[in-house]
Image (cartoon, rainbow, N blue to C red):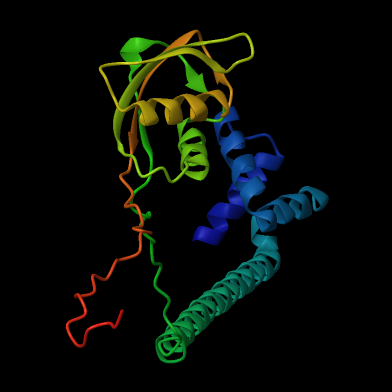
Length: 235
């Protein structure tokens, strides 16, 4: 019944017995189904043949449609099996990698990063921003490193706050210490600032903390001998 209905639609389409909407619908179906388009073209070549005489053509068309559907199903299941096999292969590789890292890399040597503590008794600086805008070229860390490398072992220590201006040569000038620190500490501070790195800005105020280093006692111990009490020297 359905086959005769399809042949009747093709017959009506070829002979212009359809409305525009029905013709559009049949053409749309023919675009999606190439076998329907082949049937329309074959019927057009057999112009004037009755629908009942096309039963053989319809049987062939049905067989081709059935074979095409079977082929599509077979291809679909083939690709589905390939996809499942690929997924299983990926899972197998991942499992092997996990087993390898668990059993073969567990005995590798482990290293621990050790952060060395900074040595004690270092010169530290504290820029006092309320005293100016001067900053050493290269940064504060580089300036502090310079102080620790150039510091003489004078045995003095303590805090000192100095005010200074930046001269045309880029070095601190007019260095003045606040309060009344040890004179040796003032001289050492002036020496370090004048012979150090260059600065940028106009003036600055800086607090420097010098570590107190123990002086080595180089004096020799004197042994007091008791007076000679045995015997009397002859004159």
